[in-house]
Image (cartoon, rainbow, N blue to C red; front, side, top):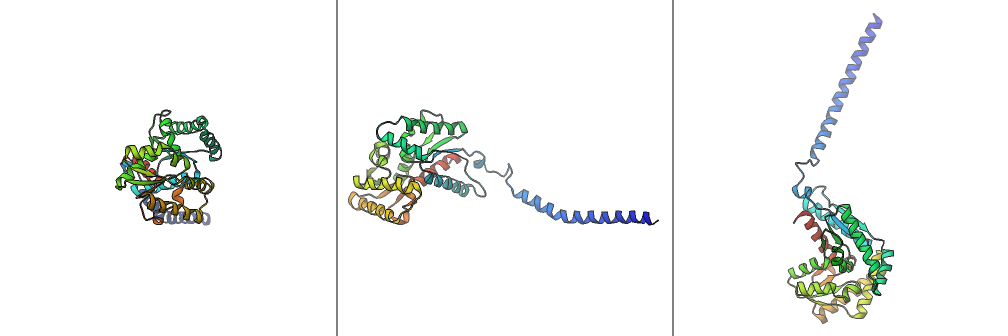
Length: 286
């Protein structure tokens, strides 16, 4: 009798424990179901999000500005689509140390090694599934037309989308700051002048040398120098006063790290932000 009572008592205890477990587990299960119900499901994902194109970025020229591209693209997609949305991005980041050696060869007239690097970067992105490409460097957009012959996906040219923004503002005379190559060669100027009817003014030879030095020795290394900022602002001020500049294009993707709209009284065209906006809009079909 004692043994039988013990077995019954044990059964009762087990049933009670199980009942308590069910009572405790029920709220947890409900909470989990509620949390899952808040997650995006196929019918809740927006059409734009589901149809988003993958952005291919040729970066590393320099990595400092490429970082800004990645951040701004994701922030813009988040702001447009809401929630936890972010951009679909593939980035091929070039070793800028090695690349700078090829740039020096290009300056002396041998463009073949540099072109090979850029062609390879674009082809890697295409093979990886990018739907289109942006080159995260104003200077290297000089090769956009050449690179486009090596791939089947489009390239959004930074000079083109920047020219459209300047024209939108009704500005006729614009200052162009950038690397010595960007300021002195015609690839950027031709688009601004011939396609958008703008008058382009650039700094003096000494000013161009100074700007180029700051870009490569400071900004590409992530160094922000107050003295350099002051000098850039003096150059912009002179271009306004003496050359009639109504706006200024920050035609190097590192310069916006140094100069902001709040620093200048005329419209500032941040080519990094403009390029990012064009890429995100294209990605979302806007």
